[in-house]
Amino acid sequence: MLPALVRENLPRLTRAIKLLPGDTRPDAAVTLADELAGITAMVAEKFTNNRTADGIGRAVQLTTGGVSLGLEQLMTVDSDAAALDFLVDHGAEAAFQAGFRQLKDLSAMPEDTLVGEYDQDPVYAQRRLRDIFFEICLTDPNANWDGPARYQEQLKQRTEAQAVVRLANWLRRHNTGGPVQDPDLNAEGVIALAIIFAVEGTGRIVARTGQKDFERFVKAVRKKKANYEADYEAGWAQLVAAVPVQHHPVLLNRIDVYRNSCTVLQHIPGRTAMKTLFAELENYGGSELDPDYD
Image (tube, rainbow, N blue to C red):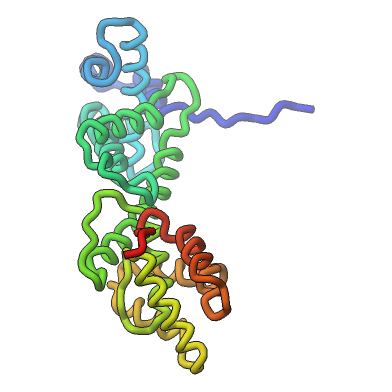
């Protein structure tokens, strides 16, 4: 069996540098080398270790990835010659800064839908940025590199998480019982509570609850069910109408999920014990529930 062919995909900076021997612009190679050396020195000082060979070597790898990532964003055509033109005309520093800004913006986005107080800590924020810088940009200049693909994958993941967090924060601010002030956020839990409690059909927005209010809610829904007055869809329509349209994609998706799979909603009409129902609610609301009976 013949070995599979592997398509060469070197960092964009490496591919541009390979074109320098045929470039006629005076001092282009010297100027670019000086700029890259300056960037590498800065990276070594801030992110690796400018006093060891290993630290400087890793700084070279990070510089290669950082400049290459910036070039991928800045160029309008997939061309190594165009990349070299940009480096000569605008400088490697401009490309590196463009790439680093992408990483900085990415690190500021939530990694998932569980947000804690530590996420706002400047020290932790700097550590997150460093981790992303290494994860995406650390590359051997002469090895295949998939940094842009990894960046796009993380951007997609974090954009989706950010949309969930923003909806949850809106629900918290508009909680009928008053805004929920808590640095720790379980975004999916907040959304789950809002969707479950919406079936009562009163127009209340519930982003945080306890056992006492949940028992009142269950009794109200069961009474409506007994009188054939309960209409889950009408309650959800009220919730959707109250929430700004930019949050609708996430909200409608979660409503569809819970419509078909939420055991709490499935068991409320029956004779399931209140204690069992609240235990099931904990699976959805998580830390957004106050388990104490008040």
